[in-house]
Amino acid sequence: MKKEYKRTLSIIVVILLIVVNFAFFWIGYQSFMYPKLSEFSITNVESVGEALVLNVTSSNHATKYEAKVLKDDEVVYQTTSDSEAIPLTNFTANYNETFTIDVVAYNKNDEKIKSTNQLLYTYQDATFLTTQDHYVTENQDMVLYLDGYDFQESYTVELLYNQNKIYECEVNGADIVIPRDVVEGYSGRITAHLKNSENRIISTFNFYLNTPVVGKLTLLSPNDGYRTRWNDVTLEFLGGENANHFYANLYVGDTLVNRLEVPKYEKSVVIPASAFSENTDYRIVLEAVYEDYVEIAETLSVNVSIGSKETTNPVYVSHNPTFIRAGTKVELKSRTNHATIYYTTDGSDPTTSSAVYKEPFVIQENMTIKTFAVSDNRYDSVINTYNFQVRDKNLVIYLSPSNQNGNYGVESTGFTTEMEIMNQIADVVESTLKNNGVIVYRNYPSGDINAWVAASNYVRADFHLAIHSNASASHEARGIEIYVDDAQSNALSIATNIYNNLWSIYPGNNVSTYNRGVKYANGSLGEVNDDFLPTGALIEVAYHDQYDDALWIMQNINTIGENIANSILSYYN
Image (cartoon, rainbow, N blue to C red; front, top):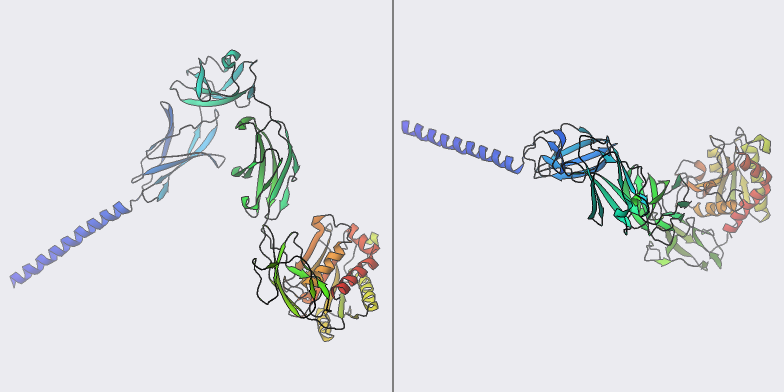
């Protein structure tokens, strides 16, 4: 029995030893494979020989330290080191300039920990004044001025040309004069280094000797504050004589995000949309530089706002597809300028490998055209399908002028209420259509949308047109617009034709912001909802609360009515 007990106890002890050893092994393995960084802090910045050194306490298992020097929350200097003494090589600043320093430690797995503190650091070394003139000729002495000069410190100045030292002198005061004969025969950049007693470069200044003066720049376009969709931006300018390099620098805030070279002799550059992010404000700085002398470059800047990437406007047709006369020429169009239109006639969905539309179709028999449009820096349009049916039919139109008798226009123009004036326009539309053999029905002003939609469907109207005028909260908006349900609505083509023709006679059609275009109600307007009406549109005939628009309406009631009627007649062939 005792032997059995001892044997069991021995086995337990062996197992325990194995478990304990494995545990120690596992802890050691984990510690080796996944070393944990310990907290650390930034202590100071000190001058060590010819170097400026940032010191931090040690973080266990750190393999490197990354230091960032920030000014007004922008990184102005960055370096890494595998030591707690981090050399700030080539870091210079202006006397008494203050910075914030952050340090991050990394282990071998690139896990990181940030220092427990930030260091507020003020540069205390003397520096050259940066406001002095960089240009100098061989007929004048070169003068340097020191800010923060310390009489207890020993300074030297050395001059370099193409990185070769050509002169050195001791500094005896805050003003340093270098005789002109020192640089006789030289031209271009002369670099001055200020060194302290430990031979560390504490400040740098560049002179430009006998260097051509770059001419002033004048911006032609775009205007400051220019706003655009996500698109190319063309920069045009004059000036910059003697410069042999031009650059367009893109800033977001104070951060340079892109730099493009401008062809020297073209005085313009197209900054591609790909250089921008959507919905972002940019400051574009144009830089005219001789050689690489950026300190004496001429610059100008312009602020631009880049919006969202838009979708190419859908393809619409010039004539009604639901009934059309044989021999009619039909055009495919998009309201997006320079869009490429692709199409098929075999019922398949078009792609960019399909046929490109170049000239009108002559409709001789029933046919189906599927089409979409593509343009630069936009999403492709939706695919629209047009089933052309060669047949005769009496055209039926339902007119639905506004019944809003509480919407008053600009009284001094003679505009009374939206209801009264829009009904006057509808009278002209109705008369013109009837004179051309069209069957026309009208809404009853005392009714409502549900009643008008029901009546329009009852008479099987081929097209239902609501006629309104617009208003804005500021009473300053202008322009015309027309609504359909969506980009694939049956009413898209007739509505676009009506809009284009009315826009052609609108007095502000040279102002792009008034060109409000074809808009999509997406189910929010009953008289254009494709679920309620087969083909419905609502036009806003200018703004009755803005003087110029209201005056145009009042002086052109007959012209506007005839224009709308003729658009309907031409569309329905």
